[in-house]
Length: 105
Image (cartoon, rainbow, N blue to C red; front, side, top):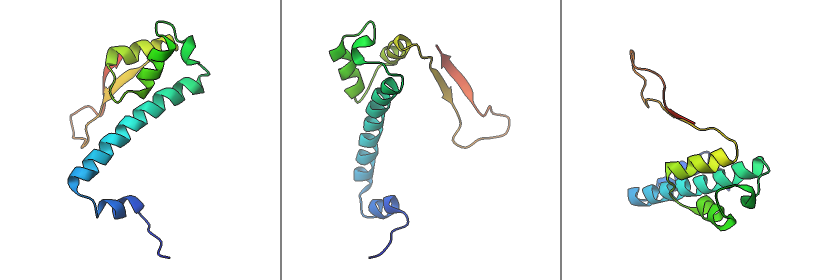
């Protein structure tokens, strides 16, 4: 049996660009859903304990593929968490900030 050192590259080499883009979109959506539920669980917060939302609403938020920033802020605030949004250049340049804070709760 051959050993593949980089399985992702091997799989992408036989996929179309459209398939790769679709796969990446699905991955990003799933990552958001998992992260919100896992974050809540890490802080031992039950869905029903988050004030301002019903338990079914929390379930929908955690299962969404897209979420409004205002909803995310309210969700996190009710769990007594702060949030920051930072931007960084992909290709840093001299004289340009390495990081800019756009938002902080």
